[in-house]
Image: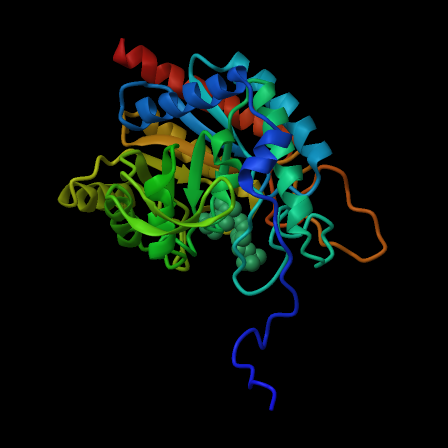
Length: 355
Ligand SMILES: O=C[C@H](O)[C@H](O)COP(=O)(O)O
Ligand SMILES: C=C(OP(=O)(O)O)C(=O)O
């Protein structure tokens, strides 16, 4: 009698992935890129700790679906980064993994053909190559870490990482952050609650042991030393925005109780702008005014921006608009420049006050 099968009953297919080391050999990082990554990580640490009075700006598309338009965006942003470098540390959002509320496109790594075919083995080299090209411009990259295996394939090219609102409460993601080499921002929960992010920071700064894979692709136990460079990203929640002075005071008080420095990044998008990308400049203007009046706990901002403003749905058989988001709506390029110039002026006035 044939054995009764009790496992893999719902697995349609298992395909091998290349080992992380194979991908790194095929798409290697050189010393100039390592320097870009390392310098930016240090700048972010200094800004978050208040040792550097500039503002951190994490800006770029909600998600990357087309490397060509992402690279064009990166080229434009590189010019701005260089021009505003004495007042802003600009890092590009290069988000390849999308956490969905229910279902939807999960990002370029998971589904590079945007058709549900799930060719992760093709998505990974695409992502790594693009990260390499962006870093080659001297522009550091930020990303959200979602799948716990993926960092082995490209975390060496990331200057700042996020753990998203849907995963900040997850032990697996806190463990992951505890082993990352870059500073990590934990978003508040989708309900707007910040305690989960503070708990995540306390967890991620501890050492953890957990299942992982090695560079050679073997199952392994990782033991981490803990990540001391974690902070909160306020992104609003179901009850609305959460970047008001009262919210910042409350977060600072809770952070102090937990022994956490309240270096805060405010996400101008998501629930802080009611998911209307055109309201991001209002959020930034509000924050800028407060920074001018002496607010020092806000040390950075996040913006969702692309070459073309708004968003588009994928319609089978129809071409996509070049440079426009297929996930959340983004601010268009021209308005992004205005917003970053305002932030630079603001950081400039803070630097003058400090002098
Ligand atoms: O930033 C992106 C989205 O807000 C996040 O991935 C959730 O998207 P969804 O609610 O459209 O699934
Ligand atoms: C998914 C994102 O944000 P959040 O986790 O805040 O929803 C994002 O920044 O792309």
